[in-house]
Image 1: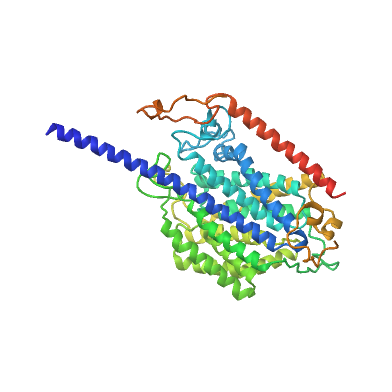
Image 2: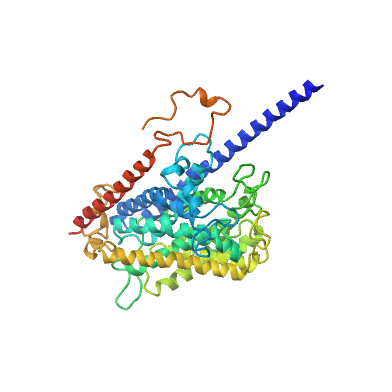
Length: 467
Length: 58
């Protein structure tokens, strides 16, 4: 009898061990697969931007987008990842110490997120670490997404290296600070104001959108965009099908992006042994995303269609629909999502026209789609979700719940974290003569001057180019 | 700059599989030096890229 009990105990231990291995490998594979899905966002932005560009600038625009992707990911490895773990309690704690959950602060960040010293073991292949690389990879793709968002607004007149410097500041600093403050269980926006932004409407989209606005103010419009009396001309891209297809690819990538926002159960870093959660430890399932992303995308298309009848704005509406509900994808009912997303699709074009009225040439409407609609989404959650708990069961008892006030504070912070760094870095780059491409080069066409390749056969001549 | 193990046999023993880097140079100062080299290369590339770009606009 005793032997049988011992045998059964050993067998049970072996089964539990095997189950844990399966869970660990599943979690690793889950986050790993979000990375190529998010690369599709960049494939989409690449097509989108090149399609929205005139023939004479198409390769130059594509090259800029590729470099944003590359430099952001590399610099996010070198220092961006460290900021995310170091700054959640700053400036509430000027020394940036550990928060309540003890997964933040300078000491913690320096132990796990620097590519040198003892922490280097978590910044490269590690025998027993199945989490750091896949989490880092997902966050690196979030970072690259911010740079791609801003990239589209600036096409056809921003210098390449000047843009890369702006992209590094955005992707490896500005949005990372926003994430540390509002997308981390120790972040002060979360613990002090109950800020909730499950799908990063504020901390990715709004930050990137308003960063682009800050750059646009220093960069100025494309040659020919505005007339002497201030009226605007429409500068059509060379390939609308490319642009619309690119936008649809971005939507595909969004499924991976939002999937990566779920914390799986059963691991040392999980909130719970048996339940998936948001990054805040509140309840979340993939099924919730199944309902709400598809409905948001559809609602946005419908809302934009009724206002514009234009496929470009319909697909932009698709993005806007998802962004408008991203903050509350975990707690919105499906029909609520339809309403919010339709409204986002409807207000999109008027908001973009309003911005253009100030003489701002946002070539693809990025400030509006990501910035304005991102903030709209953050605030709408405050209107509809007030009172919902902001953190999971392991949070301190006095945790602040979601509120309209907290969401408005978060929206203001997100606006400032985008706009101020964008304005300052582009002002400095401009002072160094590295921001705006000379007007005569813009008129001639950037590809003829900067790119040793042709986008299309020689027989196809750009109607806009002098060459 | 060597690799941390000469054989994987011991690692597959019960207590051999531990939380540690398994890359070349693990446990030494080499990761830091590679990081310095990569950072310097990035800065040089940006400076060279900008110089080339400004020449294109002349």
